[in-house]
Length: 464
Image (cartoon, rainbow, N blue to C red):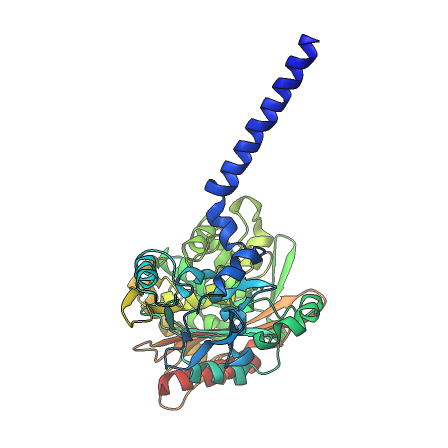
């Protein structure tokens, strides 16, 4: 009997060690991530006994408030669906999303200085309360962007190119977080994906707005100058693929400035092929393709094919934003911001400051440079090319009286469907204060659909 007993003993010993290991992992190593996991409703229940901090817009409007129901503080959202794609929700049943999830520690009064404040409150018998957030979003501008986009699937991103502060962020379809419990089954089955923040999580072929990056690569490496001469016959063959201009237009003799303003695909295919796959990939990555945007709310990583798969036909197509190129509206806004900000892309941010409920400043955002893809000289040249787009090219729909606007349109082809309409630009061109990127899913022409939306947002931003 000794041998079977010893075997049984060692089996139970191993099981005991495994149990200790699992408990140690769960209670020590995995505890922080499990605590904030959206499915951990027990932690959420405990925290909902704490009065959460309020969330305010840059112009002082309340975005998230509290109401007491029994032992719990429940959230209410005075702006309804206007901010839901990024503000998110705080639900006892469904967890958290958006700002409510990412800044949960601050809002529930945890971490760093807030722990010290909370300890003092417990000692003195004061009720525990969370810290307040003040965001960078201007609700007047947010409403303008919401109205301009209307009931069209897509997104609008507006930011300050000098700091990276997000001024407006719109996604449609969206949802009313005040009705989350009622709408949850419908929201998860809706083919329009209203829970998706299209501004940061959506990935779309950028079409001709990508020509900003192609032009940057070609100008900076000396492949072209603004006055470089070209001739267009309406179509051009590259490695077995035939490139056509939008609307089958023929432009004849022209320079690179005209090619950019009129968005001539054949010329950009020539420029892209001459620039080369390695260089174009390098500049796409320098503008943020293939990188996580340093943005606490997360989002999709924009994609650009590797140089090893870009033969002549593919290289010609990626030069005008097709054939495997995918971008989020946020990244295209940041690409335009590089031009507006002398070649530097600032880290985008949404939370301006965090204050405890006594009004003491806990955190204040500090603008930081993320990437520097181009020199100030190249940025200045590109800005002038983008001015020509709005002055006499495809982007006249974004023009403002008395203000010089710089921009680039895009009409991105989608297999079996209408093209996505794009616009990315900034104003004033000589002293950029706001950048706007717009995408309308299957909206048609960027010049006729997206540019007028951008015009309304730019006009409102410059009046704020």
